[in-house]
Length: 181
Image 1 (spheres, one colour):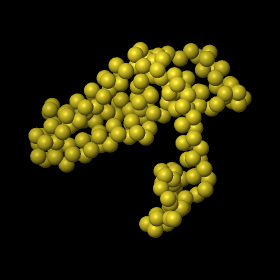
Image 2: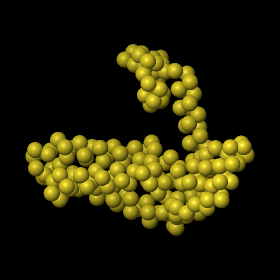
Image 3: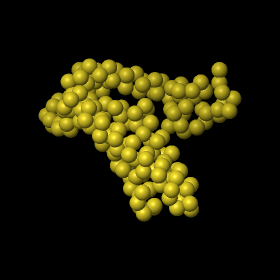
């Protein structure tokens, strides 16, 4: 059944419809098919990567990429000889926060990131609680944004190579606005 409030969802831009595709709302069938295909693509890749994950549990494989291997994989993908997620796997773009840390850096990289996120929540909470009262709304927003981004990173989509800047940027903004912790 269609949610009455979102009956106009077919008129929204395709990007918004794609976000809404996880809900029982009426969206364009092409957009829904694309979203379902993307989800299937991710789960196929996760299945393959999870089989490799134990090999990199203690010591990750790092970020080195052999350009020849990348070229050959791109050509094999173009010719349909390998699944299209092989290029993403080779580039370390797993579309998953946990895997984007564990595979390149191992368990110690994951522990380090969790420590950074926990310390970040503490810094943001202390600035919200004890910072300048005029900045309480801003500090509350930064804390909320940081926590939401952290959950999104692990549960929906995560790419360490691009989201580390976001985490550190939120913390840096809070520290600079509040003159420290």
